[in-house]
Image (cartoon, rainbow, N blue to C red):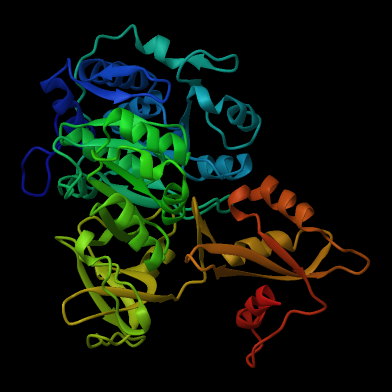
Length: 514
């Protein structure tokens, strides 16, 4: 099988091949510790990936195909992703918070050829099996509903695979949030991902020992790849529990972990935090939602100078970073900085007419990056709207200061960032209008004292109806997943409107203080 070449004519090595090369260099080294406590060596992990890749190839999986992964924080899930990419296929990772119909819609939209399921997702897999759009299902281990593909893979020799892909081929189609049946699929290329992993993380450890206590489907998976590429190791937990995280950091001598701000706050509030040996921890990456400055100061006091704030988007990947000595930097009106552009990334702030604005003047944040998406899956018009002349239009409003620090102050696009993904009000409103008790509705977000965002719904009931919060939450969860379920439902005789006739979300937010 011939190697692909990049634009310079040199051999192109995918991230998965690069990871396997590092594993092969020291096969007896322990590189992965599962949530159940099993320790997997570099050689064993590499052999599992090679064997599964060969088996997937035997089944016709290859360049241009899409493989679905219904996997959690398991060794099998990591092996499956590497193996699928080694065949030349792209992957779509389905994750917690999506309902089964949404997952089926995603698999249909990407023309999935196979769905791999690990041991922690059997119940959800059974829900998916009868739904239209779901491709053939195989199990990563024994199950009572599908063939064990790992058992079949064990019959293959562990030979290296060289995927017939180039830097412009997709390695993944990513989805943000539990969206509709045909949601936004973000195309990420092998070349951009490989380049993004080459940037060594400051303070992550030498070698890094990364704790994945949030989903590998999101940023934890990228950090896991980074750790393995740098000759480090990864410790898996199935989900986030603050007491368990503290104990794991101490027991496993963790150097680096990734947390959304709400999870960081839960860690800080745990009674064991001050009595736990966290001396091995040299980097805590955080981001995804706005962080409260008071809580960041508390984190610095308890954890030391280990905080690294990240700002990015799925469309652009990592944009800026703040180090431990930059956490206190604030701009006008006390806005905390999200940092300066990481190497290779350019940022400009523009007015609506395309004029580049002077430092300190708010406008839309545009990003040009070698790590950016290639576009949205099968949505060329949306791609042209967001990706113009090589610049990603983020939809965020912000400004740069004279030293290149970026401050985010608002969001052009109506979107609510919650733990686990994004909630798009228009999509939730469209769903609620299908409820027999809902005549009109408007969805809006609010931030609490710690800058965490929450989803609320204002509802005008249909005549003779009075829907309850529990009823609405159950309706939404069944159709879109718990990610979209509103935390409050306000029953109103009419939706307040602005002078131009649009729902007045400012007035609606005032309901929270009544």
